[in-house]
Image 1 (cartoon, rainbow, N blue to C red):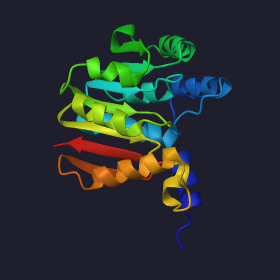
Image 2 (image 1 turned 30 degrees about the vertical axis):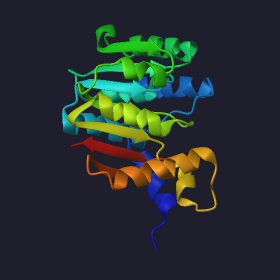
Image 3 (image 1 turned 60 degrees about the vertical axis):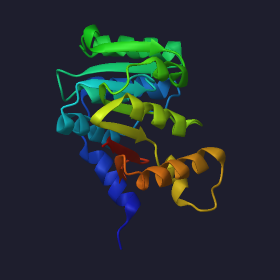
Image 4 (image 1 turned 90 degrees about the vertical axis):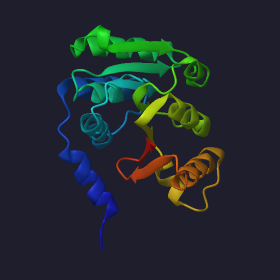
Length: 208
């Protein structure tokens, strides 16, 4: 019988994380901000490489662990990252500089993504990554799909809610919203939905 926990642990150890990203991970944990796992980051980097994404939007900068993964595999990619916490974003900016990432490749916007995204150019971005664990994921995903070009990708990180989505007895507001998100887009003919069971889940939606 397959031991899911053992497979997950092996998958995480398989990834060789670049030194600057490891430094960002340590800083993130020191600040009490839970970063994405190495395997999740590696998947995001592969997603950029596979798709050739150049214009990328990230919701939730944190201290930039996911941001650096998004920029590592395509020297032509540019990232717009939105974050509510100004202090976290400043720390991420310092870490980007230490990693040798050119400032011209990153645009940092401070504020609430729910307010900012409707003012961004629709249908122009190759990849939008939603790195959020609170309420409002449905609205963020709808806004992200408006921003994506035809053939563009929306990636929703933490889509399995730490495994709670798979537990029928868990009915809190956030878990319920995630179940609605997964159910709605599984049957939506305007996207091609795939759930990738890495970390606590990444839902990818390819806009048709």
